[in-house]
Structures are given as C-alpha cells and as structure tokens.
Length: 105
Length: 190
Image (cartoon, rainbow over all chains, first blue to last red):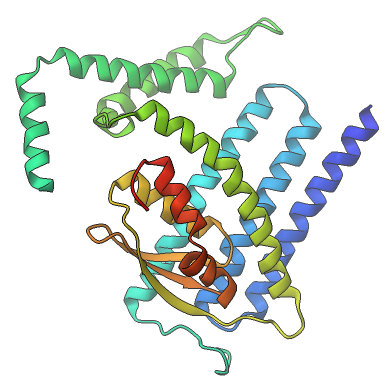
C-alpha cells in the first residue's frame, strides 16, 4: 500500500520536474522575449500542478493536503495575471515580436 | 450607461441603512477567519492541539483586512449568481484538460530539434461584456499554453492575443469552443 502511494507520487513529481526542465530549455532556445515568456510562464502551470498533486498524494489526508490545494488554487489565479502583466508591459514599451524567418535575438 | 448604473448603485447604498454594510463586513470577516483557522490549524481535534495566540492573532488580522478591503471580496450581486457558480465549476475540469493537452503541445515545440514555432499576434471580437466573463476568458487564454492575452478592450469585447503558432491561434479564431463555453458559463451570447 505504502509503496504504491510512493510510486504514484514519484511519477507525478518526476512529470512535474520534466515540464519545469522543458520550460528552462524553452527559455534558452526560443528566439525572443514573447516566445520565452510562453515557455517559462506556461510549462510552469502543468509542472507546478503535477508537483503539488504528487505531494498531496504522498501526504495523504491532513491539513497539509488542504494547504497544498489552496496553494495550487492561488497559483492558478496568480500565474496568468503575472504573465499577462509582463506581456502587456513589453507590448506597450514597443518591443517588436519575432516573426518566423528572422534572426534570433 | 456604465456611469448611470454606478450612480444608481451609489444612491441605493446611501439610502439603505448602515446595517447592510455591517452584515457584509461580518460575512467577509467570517470567510477570512475560517480560512485563517484552516490554514493555521490552531484547533485540531485529531491531536487535541489548541493554541490561543494563533486564534487571537487571527481575529486581529482578519479584522484589519476586513476594515481595509471589505468591499473587494463580495461585490454587488449580479443575477443568477448561484447558477453561474455551478456552471463555472463545471467549466474548470474542461479547462484543466485543455491545459494538460496544450502543455504537451508546447513541450513538443520546445524539445523538437527544428523548433516548429511561428509566433503571431491575433485580434478577435467577442460579445462578452461583464468583467467576470472577460477576466475568466483572459485567464483561460493565458493559462492554456501557446496563447497569452496582451490586452482587452472591455467596451468592444476585443482581445489582443499573442500565439506561439498557427494551431493555438486557430483554436481561438476558428474553433471558438473556449469562447462559447465562457459565454455559456456567464449566460451571455457568444
């Protein structure tokens, strides 16, 4: 019983780590500010959720599970707002988006 | 039109007695305080844990926050709030599934050796007007990997969105499932 829970939690957290690493790779590979924001701001959503759900499975039923759930909830509210704010700031500053075929910046 | 409505509401609250405001503050205080108790776990029947300092600190903190921002948590009531809440809860699993699928799409684009991205800025009009509907759609677009909301024109329901490739852009421009679902949640015409 314990080992099954451990295996499920490990798979979930490893999956989350995979998406986090993907976000970092995207940050390094993508050509400009906007596309990099896509990689970092987005892969986080699934990465964080998988890590937190993994922790919830590992923890079992307790106050900490509820706290983790609220953590997930607030990340879901705050993440898009933050990403949007950075994006809008860059757009209003007049940063030109990269188009296909251009050189990377 | 918007200003007229604002004045009407203001007038209403002014003519109404102060009791309504106190009731609202008590409701906000109760929500905050229950949340505090839940988070601090200062009364735990399972192991008999009980810490008065957290309980008293909670009353002070929830009280200060209530005094400063009681008009932010619960705003003026709209129509059919309960039905909209249920529809919103029904919308969340679909949105989570979309996030799941789209995340694999972006991970594929990141890790593919040729990096198949084709960024573009798209613009589209919706018939959504209420603040909640616009916010929900904007957050849904940003949460779904591949698209980020840059700006909204609330008067026209116009969205300015940065998409990383043609496929996520077409999901908004051609498919429109997400827009229709949000319109259904807030009972506005798509």
